[in-house]
Length: 127
Image (cartoon, rainbow, N blue to C red; front, side, top):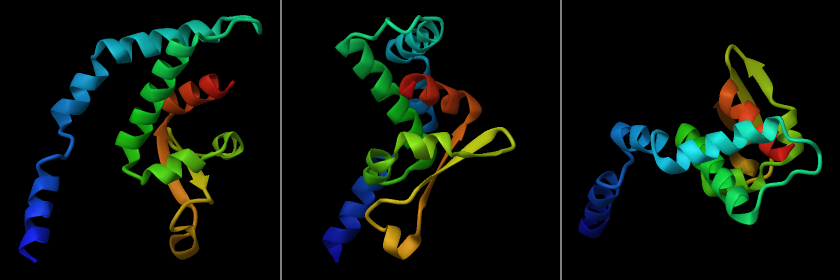
């Protein structure tokens, strides 16, 4: 029991703070990723990102979705492009239902909620 309490205290100390998120949003990685996303909107069909650029944008988008939702990683890894495209718009947010994940049998489809901006970035990336 004592070990569980210690682990709980350790875990609380590892929470991401508002300052951590703000710092990430202003980081060089975030700036590069948003710039690349913006550039790809105007590209013709033949243009593609290099491996390093692709990975940077992918990781940036996944971190943003993860921070906004706090789902288990399996929910993100199981989300499909079709589920993204079928998202339900509610006010200025989009709700993406992910039906295949570890606890789906008990809790049903997981809901991923993203801003309109993040949703559009995901669509561009999945293009």
